[in-house]
Length: 117
Length: 113
Image 1 (tube, chains in turn purple, green):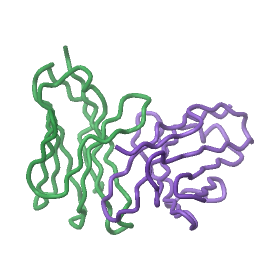
Image 2 (cartoon, each protein chain N blue to C red; image 1 turned 45 degrees about the horizontal axis):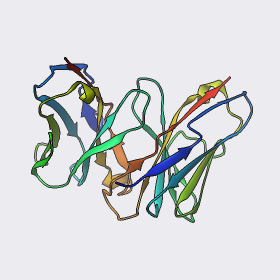
Image 3 (tube, helix red, strand yellow; image 1 turned 60 degrees about the horizontal axis):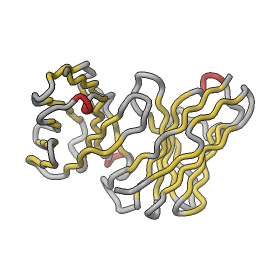
C-alpha cells in the first residue's frame, strides 16, 4: 500500500508560537491531501482539502488564516498552526490520494501530536 | 440525522468468535465505502474498501454492502486480541466533492481472551 509520512510525530510548544507539520507521500504522487484533527475519544474531523498547486479548501468553522496549508509539490503538503493556543492541542493527521477521482482510497500518515502549553 | 452512523460500543467479543460491525449512511449517492482500524494513539489504517453490492472477503475480514438499505458492515472471523481497536466506517461524500470522506464516530471493539 501507499506510504505517507508526517513530521514531527510529536511537538510541544509555547502558546503564541507557530508550528509547521509536514506530510509526505513516499511512493506515489499525491494530487490531493487532506488534513484532519482528532480530539481525545472523538472521531476524525476534516479541516481542509489540499490540491497540488492550488489554494486549500477549508471546512466550515476552520480558520484559514490560523491553519495555513501549502501543497507546493505532488509529494509534500504542510500545515502551519499559527499563534498556537492550548485549545489547538490535538492529534493532527494527514491523508493522501493519487487523484484518481471519486472514492479513491485515502492513505493516512502516522499523525502529529501537538501540545501547546 | 448523522451522515454516517456507527454504534459507538464498546463491543466485546470472545477470542475466536465473529465480530460484526455495522454502519449506515444517509447519502444515497455515495459510491465508495471504507473500513479503517485505529489503535489507541495511532492514525487510521485501511482494512477494506468496497464499491459494489454484496460481500468482499480479504483474509479474516469480510465487508458487506447493501446500497438499497444504505448499510455497510464488517465481519471479523476468528477474532484475535490484536483486533481490539476502534473501527471507523468512511463513505465518500459526492455532494461535497468526490474525494472527501465522511467518517463515522467509530465502534470500539474489545476481543476478550
